[in-house]
Length: 424
Image (cartoon, rainbow, N blue to C red):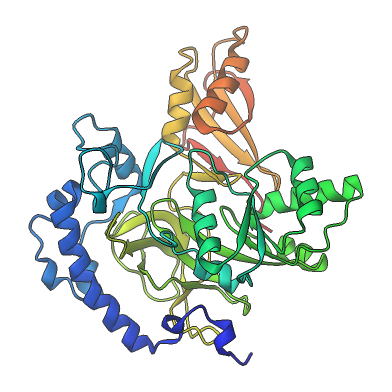
């Protein structure tokens, strides 16, 4: 592949690796000093750290890792200075205009995330560009616009490219098909499994969708089988990898050879349960330091597993590549694009005192995630299964089956969420 300027979003993507690393390491101590000065959480956790001395990856690796469960615990702490657990440099109310949040979100947990003003706050335009989106395209955005930031994340990136956006959101499959048939979008944005559901529904209805030629997909695994299925229908799908806390982390290119790390983050791969970087190529947890001053997360553990790929991207992008999503470092599972945490399973069980132990089993193949809550109870109390199903919808925002089982029948292995899906 012979790269040209048309292949790249900006000149940052083709910098010499040495120049990029120098720029990142120059920005790192500035970001740490900013985090210490403007967020209560990092003022405490980095109190004994000289920010100016953290100007290398070795120095960064000595700092503590903040994992999602800790973020959740700090946000739930009644003594926390704000709903963000003291990690955000922006908010609302009696704050200067420059520190005012544009939006605030509540992802399952609930974990709250702030969004500041400005173009492409989440830096998603880069991933959309790599997926083939260009100014003038109509993008059909099927990520959620309710509570969670996914819809807004992708929409802001599409706007930065000059795209027009149809805010489809989730669900209502038949209406999604009809909107596509009428508006003729150039591309789809959303989870890959929902795109397959839409296309299957279009086939069922006998509706052709010839305008759809590209897709930027994320929120879940994108197996080669589904990628090839889309290609056979004339749709080139490319992955973006990001989180509601960090924005874009990495993105797929037309080389289809790993994911290129975004220019606005520093990524480490560490041994799960520690903050120790692993050798190149070894699978570990993705830990990210963002250079976003509004929400300056330092060494944020995503809980995702991946590994660094050797060599450069054939498209001419010079940043480090990772293999993509290789599973979870903890028991948190992503189901239909939504995170489900062990603490949520405990909350579901707590709402029904008859439940002795509970285990959530996630099964099925890609594009067909299924959840089943296995609950140990004495006998089969009338109406309990229905109450548990309602609690599951309320807590996780997802539907699932409830199976009542005998006390002592679940394995005594400490597993709360079992991911039994096939990722072929």
